[in-house]
Image (cartoon, rainbow, N blue to C red; front, side):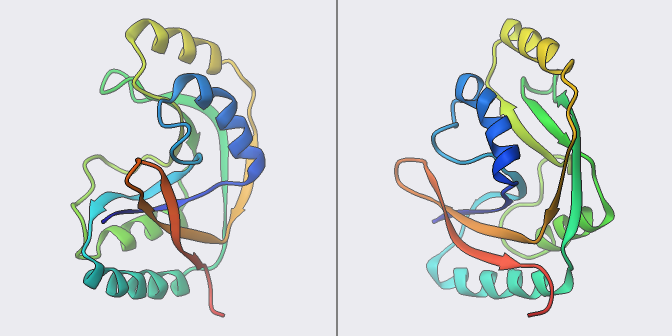
Length: 170
């Protein structure tokens, strides 16, 4: 089974991202806009319960925190991804590190750059046009993160929530 760990932003931020994703992200219909905390990896059914328990322990260590996103950026020339840049915070980075320190999955392929993808797998020309247009937008999203989600991939490539973890002590 393939799983991952993500934060889903507010509906307002998702609507903004989706207004571009529907044209520029081939995965638009498969997963809502999100911030990846742990990239997809294979896990056995028997390991899933232990992984979930460890995520619950991590969630209890953190209180809800605020994130902001004020600009569009890109991973070009590494790849033609255009994204909404989420300003890194100490809490977000520690949460990411704690989740990725677990013995499940592979270590992160890249340094953590908190973001919400709005376009990917773009040609050079498309990337240049889309990024050139979107980087001029005046953006100001601020919202509270109070949960993260363990998600799993269906046979058709779509992703569903397996479990939600609320931050803080219950």
